Image (cartoon, rainbow, N blue to C red):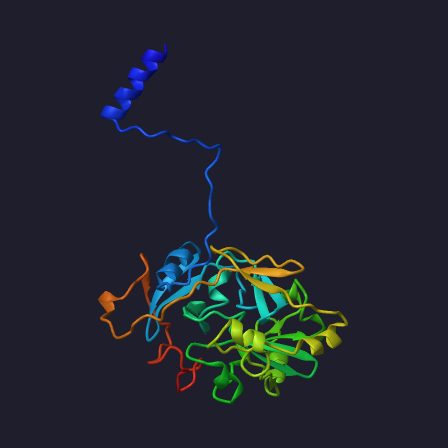
Length: 306
């Protein structure tokens, strides 16, 4: 037997250059850190395609119209506000919420409803904040509107952009039940929006932790938490924003919120149109019956942000 084994071993070494194989019960995986390499907008195009339509929109490139329930409103429907270590963050229950509520801007057009315009910078929410009487209000920023413009008088949100809520209900999980907007009470919204005080609480001016976390990005962190604690009669501890490796819904618990927040590069608009990335499937913009030369003239200021 020993002689046979010796012969087989010699043959193996001579002809096959055999090496021993080692088997384990299960493969081992090393957790990869979230990618720091910027992505192109192709990720937006691919990830959001199952949940809506991409439109080739004049002056903006490819924009996205979500397939949502009637009465949908950004930063109002199917989500709520959560206080985090990076300011007030919108926690969405939509599968695509990681993108449309934390990058880019929103605009409204009668022919399409609410339209999302992609952007390359992440924030807990891209809104402008205000208060009026016993209400807090917020409105999604329109394309090319920066935080400085939104609080410095360069742009005033149209009345139908505003969501107002009694101050004591700002932290409600079912906040949409308390929101007053142009859909359910235009008279109240018009009256409130005429006399608002903008909350100028951006991430550069008063929170070094936020400034270091989102270096170079300026957004409005919302009302001061101590003020809201008084209005709601509750103690509020900031949740830690935790970066995940793939898109998912945000599921806040008592200590942290999960967000998918990849880095994106702004598309090079100097390239010919045929050379720019595009969604696999998109539609041409169809103007409404009362079409005018600039489909966003009521939604944007004359000058652009930086």
